[in-house]
Length: 140
Image (cartoon, rainbow, N blue to C red; front, top):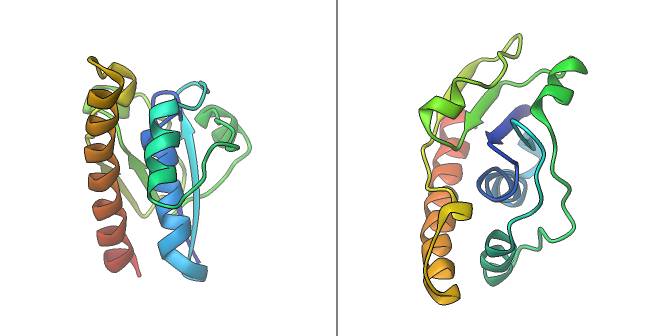
């Protein structure tokens, strides 16, 4: 089983979406977790756009990556879904086969009306979904 950790700043949107898509599409060949540089609260935009795609993340909890690191967890892939600067702050997990950075816009930074923010969040969601499906093909 290939173990993949998705990381972002607060584990509130992008990493949650990536984890959900890998869980949905990866089947029994993959195990997904997500965490942030610090645990935040779920982003309502992420919850809404994932619900539109048939996935309920509303009950997910946010995780602190340093807790996972201290527990000695191992991953085959660590995928950061934030900018390179924040990606560099993530701990180095022993035994990682590959570290990947996907730079997706942060939904917590979106401005405008609620519909404009949802529209932007849908774009991020769809890009994450495509990236996860491509990763499944690469790692599978």
